[in-house]
Length: 485
Image (cartoon, rainbow, N blue to C red; front, side):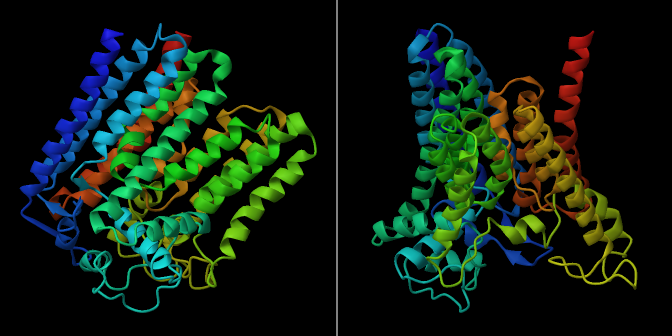
């Protein structure tokens, strides 16, 4: 127990030291400027939780964050080993340490993504002013003490809410409760919500694996809940993906006993962010295996939830970041790697062939768009095969294969998207190894968003992209080779 307590204290100390060091490194920034889009990111740094994007030098912040997360990853390994002998108290130890470390991280003075401030705008618009955040058609006023300071960063015409209607309703409730709160409190609240969601997601995994015994279930759940990506993108990044995960994981956790509740939770996950829809066929098959035709009612409930939530808005929207996922831009993805030579050769604009018609949702049938369509087609094929295989022989790896294919098909990749496959770390085996390394290395994406690098360093984000795509596959292949040998 003493060693367990010592590791828990070390966990919190690492998080605190990382917060102080990252804040100090950010204060040494010379300028914030995106030379490509001609955007001034100084407005983001001036916010109470400083947004550090397109920073020069920038490397000091990125390397500091990486060092902290690497130390947290090492501490998590030792802590999970220390749960041996904890018995029934293992889950309490896990949740206690997770909450403690996440609480410290929630005080992080910087953030490397400005999404939480977009959340604040949508929350304030809907909850305080009663404005539909799915239809921002007029410039916002800087007179409001919460929204006003954000506008120099996100502009007076920020993009409309891209998230699911249930998330927007919940954000609106938070905005109403916090009508008199400061911008700092409004932003931090989304960190608190994300931490609570992470704890709920971890508990769902432990509940699902309860047949393994409290120690094994807690250690496997901790492989997810104490993963550096999970801690950072919830407690620091405040991303709503973890809310989607919590609802979705509990849907699978209760599917065998409460099929309609599982359908309700799956619908909530979809209504928070639409990528949860990918897991629905697998959930319905699981329900059908034990409850027969009840899967029909569960499916109807899961689809009714986002529809009913969407009825709250005159202009429904929020299909989970459709524009970002379909991709008006390419970055840190297989699409992006393939298209770099096309852009360099100057053949990226205009239709690839004169006779090609406009593509639905994508527009001009240029070479980059054709690459994008081809990659999405591969995902659809993989998804169809995985669903059929799961129907014939239910194995959880089919779910992870489908989500991994989806992540590879996204045109513009962000670290928090890796949360969608991260629960695989609890399942063990090859997919568990893959998910752990993929999630850890995906944090390399911040070299593109966080650093105002000179043109001579164009190869750095390319190298980072290749690393998080290739290294997890290599690690899994090597482990399989050693096992066979």
